[in-house]
Image 1: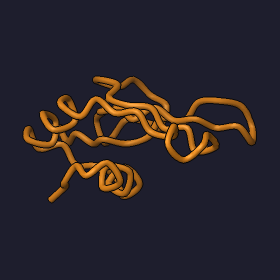
Image 2 (image 1 turned 180 degrees about the horizontal axis):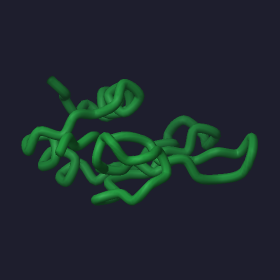
Image 3 (image 1 turned 180 degrees about the vertical axis):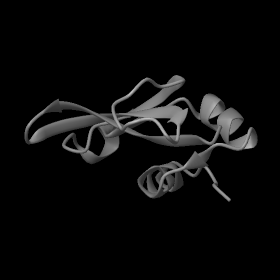
Length: 83
């Protein structure tokens, strides 16, 4: 099973927010996740857009989970290194 850290979309039209989740790569975008590790609000002010559980993310990365391209950019903003 290939595990990915990716975004799960919530909110209404034109007012999205996302949960950063760990899930099987074959699952649909809004399908069942293994764990929720953060929240991303793109329309909030700059300092309030991103909330992460850094210890859980680092643990999943050490187990071999691969972040999506967007999540990788978000993690780099919070100085969480992704190989």
